[in-house]
Image 1: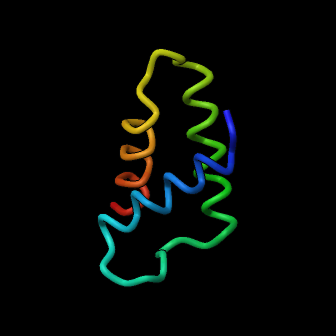
Image 2 (image 1 turned 90 degrees about the horizontal axis):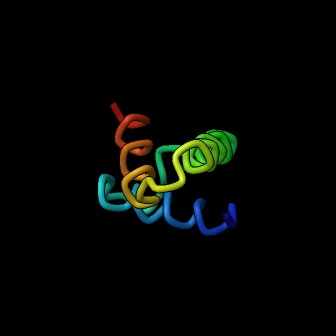
Amino acid sequence: MEKKLIVKMIKKCFKQYCEADSLPISEVELEELAQRILLAKEKEQTADLYELINDAVYEFLT
C-alpha cells in the first residue's frame, strides 16, 4: 500500500476533527501513525482502510 496515500488520508481525517488549518500532529508522529496503520492493514487485510485510519486518528486525539 502506498504510504503517501495513507498520509493524505490521515490529514483529511484530522480536518474533520480540527477547525484550524494546522494539524495537531508533527511530521514524525504522522509517519509513525501511518506506519501503524500500514501494519494493521497487513495483519488484517480484510479490514476497511478508512475505518483503520479513523480509529487511529480518534485514538491519537483522545
